[in-house]
Image (cartoon, rainbow, N blue to C red; front, side, top):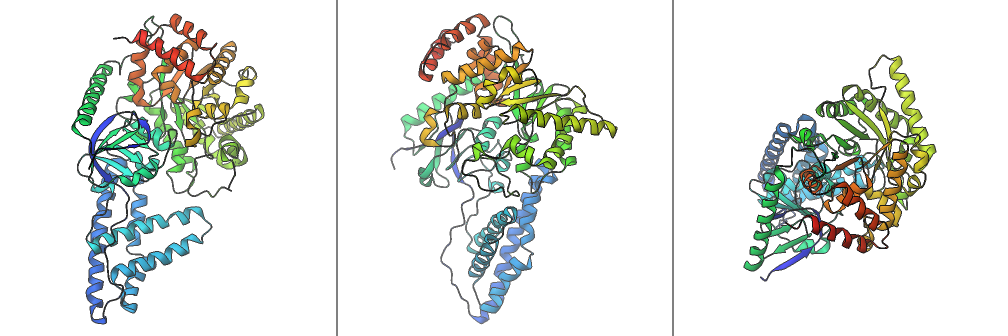
Length: 580
């Protein structure tokens, strides 16, 4: 076959060579009889029992491996699947189909699965309805042993592969073993989905959003994954392989070059120290040594704690996570963002009403202010954790002063409550907001008098400033943080904040983009928070920049009309600084 390329969205840089591992595909259903003769029933039951034993052994192995690597609390989903093998409503009914109706074992599994699927579909509770996926997973596993065909799951990966999947949940992504999962490809997804964010944070090259072309990928096929350009190469000829091998060597040389910057402070060539922090969503992202590489956590996304649970985490469970984070950073600042659910982020156990335009609807702080007990529980956990480190609270999606004042008032009430209960907390705990809605930019001078800090969320700020749906591939080319309107918005916010003596951070992708570094330096951004994988690269970039030249570049850029003009000027500036 000739060489072929699939185009997707490159969301995490890096070039990898490896065999495709198709994850989550159902077992191949070879032909099987629907009925058996009465005298075959006992043998058929024994064949089913053998498939059950094999399935149980696999699930127990996965549980042991997960517990050893991630802890006991991460095994609940697999333990739930294991329990189906002894559930009378599942396994008992499969046996009943064989004994009473002389169905073949395969037919019995499929019949019971279809019955349960119809039953779950009628349920109103979204969490319970979602459990049918666990039932189907167990049924597919039984089928694979009955038919003696390969059933792909992460636990069966024993050699380096490129993972290929319809989609990956954040909880699966964070469990990927980087020693054998070289990279991943998905059919759906975009640059700002949480799976994409996690892949960058974990340093796993990834291409998402390959669409219908995804169907061309086969299990075991040799692939070249280019996470930088968003390309998958199939059946690469020798010239292409040589080209990518050369590029991979360049990447490895660059990585060696950057290694010496990993533990150095972020400092410009004229000696200005810059606070580089990291974005974190799960404790598993806290790799060894990270605390020594970064100034702190500029964004802790608490929604992952909720998204990876089976029900709302209570105060004690949240407190344990926030406390662990605060202690891990040993006094360095951590900014904890309160629950940012809604828009593209949902909870499987919370059936929120449908909204025609969820990104402009009941999400983030709006939802929290409407669900006071949920919000109160989280705020108590965060405020209590402030006794164990330098914790700061940040409210997302603030669009009005009333929202900020209501959220802050509730926080102050909780502080009074904790004081009466003699529970320790940091009474100087800072309270700030995400700057991601144009109304906050317009009222920045007013907000700056009341907040302790701002953190610019460029992903949403670009979306709302330019009226571009960041999940819509048809308008993706319009989504650009180098648009002059976005740059002017960031600049005006920083000026207004500094006038009141308040600091400004940035926790969107722009903060970790070397191309954006001279603009942010020229604007005097105080804290730059990014994926951990971007830290060393941004330190290297800053070491070649100085404040005066960056300020001159900014003054030129502020007078330009289009994103393309801005990009060309910055590229020319970079070329003059990085000619070697």
